[in-house]
Amino acid sequence: MFTTGKLSRAATAVCLVALAGCASSGNGTAKPAPGAASSAAAPARTHGCLSEEQARAGSIDLPATSGIRPAYFQQADGGPAKVAVVFSHQRDGSLCDWVPYLPAFTRAGYAVLASDVPGSPADDLPAAVKWLGDKGVTEVVLVGASKGGTGSLVAAAVPGPLPVAAVVSLSGPAQYSGDNAAKAVRTSRVPELFAAEEDDTPFSQDAKDLHAAAVAPGKALKLYPGGNHGADLLRDGALPDVLAFLAQHAPAAG
Image (cartoon, rainbow, N blue to C red; front, top):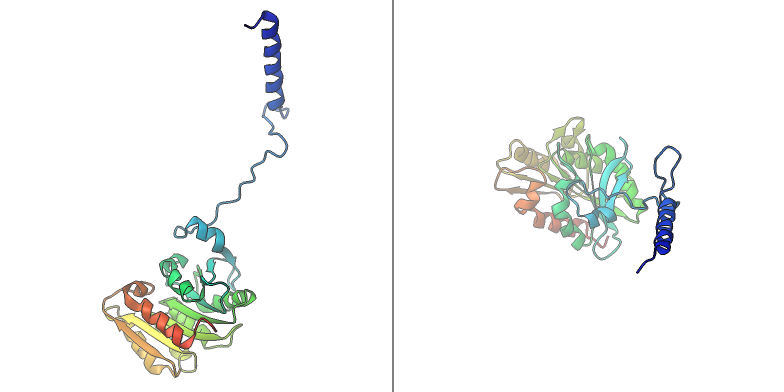
């Protein structure tokens, strides 16, 4: 049982501990002890479609001609790849359009890069390809949806930082803004896959016209039932055809 003297000494000790832990900064605000600042890292950017693990591993700021772009990069499942697939989204789209399909490409041995590009992909693709070269990639495949397909066809027709092994245009129009794919395919020798859904007009006709005008020896045309557009073709049956086209013209081994 505590005596009066013991109680007094205990109370004094409690007060001293409390004072030591609550030192004032002089304006009534408690000052945290030295080294107590939070060291928690900023949350990784998931863009609303990546897992936290994916975001921590692959969310990047990608240098581009028109500025820094949010992007996602992932290596092939088996390790550093020599061939990378660069995805360009359609108007009002984002890198998230491609996320559900990326595992199919990394399993096949490709690195993947998808970014947000508000303008023309043709303007930003050279910087993205150069960035991949710094990662050890030796050649690229360009896959684009709608305007992304048009921009990819245009970019493949001119020399870039790395060789373009193949191009895939999903619902790409013959022209978009300043990008003229109808002109590009008349000179490009890069194998090109033109794909669209039959009821998605006028893009299905664009695919036919671009294929007819293309001079690349490895050109191909795929038309699917339905009326979906752009990246949705991968969900509707185009994914196996795209992977087969890449295996033929741009094998992951390089």
